[in-house]
Length: 301
Figure 1 (cartoon, one colour):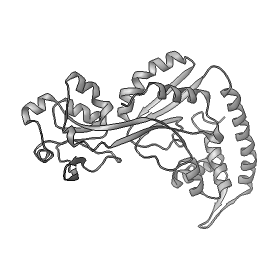
Figure 2 (cartoon, helix red, strand yellow):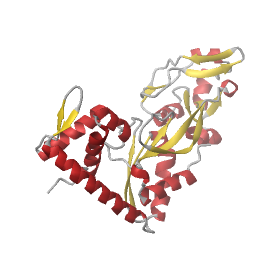
Figure 3 (cartoon, one colour):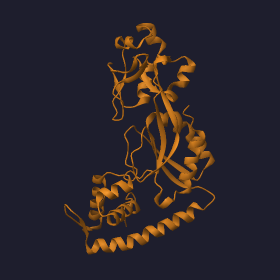
Figure 4 (spheres, helix red, strand yellow):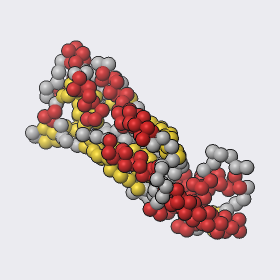
C-alpha cells in the first residue's frame, strides 16, 4: 500500500505535463514550479515506482515503455479525478482540508483571527495553516491557497486580488521620548532604523521630498525575518520601522505607535493576492468558499 503522505495525483499531473509540453522547463512554467523542482519530483516518482520513465538528454526527453504506460493510464486517472472533483464541487456543503500559506503579518492580523468564524460557518472544512515570509512552491508543498504580497510572477496559477496596502514609518512613544522625534528626512540618519532580512525586502526606505524622491539607507542594530517581528521590536522601543499600514493601524489608534514623516510618504503600496491552483478552470468548492470569505472579510485599508 502506498504511503499516505505521497501526493500521487500531484506527481502524476506534473509527469503528464512534462510529457505533453516536452520538457521540464515548460512544465515548470505551466505548474508554477521551478525546473529543478519538476526534475526532482519526476526522479522521486521513478524511485518510488522502481522504473525509469524518461530517458533524458541535453536536447529532448524520450518516454520509456514504462513511461508510455504510465502516461496513457495517468491521463485517464486525471480525467477521472477531474470528473470526481466536479461532482464534489457540485455539492451544497464544502468539506475537506484547505492548506493555506501566508506571510506572517497577514496571518497574524487576518488569517488567524478570521479562522474561527470561517470554521464555524463551514464545520466540515479543516484548515492547515503555515505562516512564513518564504515564497513556497504551491504544487510541491501541496498548498491550496497562498497569500502573496507584491508583484506576481507569471505562472500557470490563478490569483484573486484581496486589496492593497500602503506603508508607514512608526516608532513607539518611549523611543521618541528617549531619542527625539524626526521631523525632517535628513534626521533619520541619527535614528535606529530597523530592517527586514527576508528576500523580498526593499533596500532602503523610499521618501518623497519637494526636491525629488530619495531612498534612505536602513542602518540599525537589529534585523528581523518578517514584518510582524519588526512591529514587535518597534513596540518594544528599539527603533523606527517601516511597515504595512494594516499592521500598525490599531497600534497608532491606541497610541502604542506614532506615524512619522507622513508628509514624505511616497504613497507606494503592495497588492495582496490569494494564489491558487485551478486546473482546467476547476476549483474545489471548499477553496472557492474560502476565497470568497477572504475577499469579504479582509480589509487592508
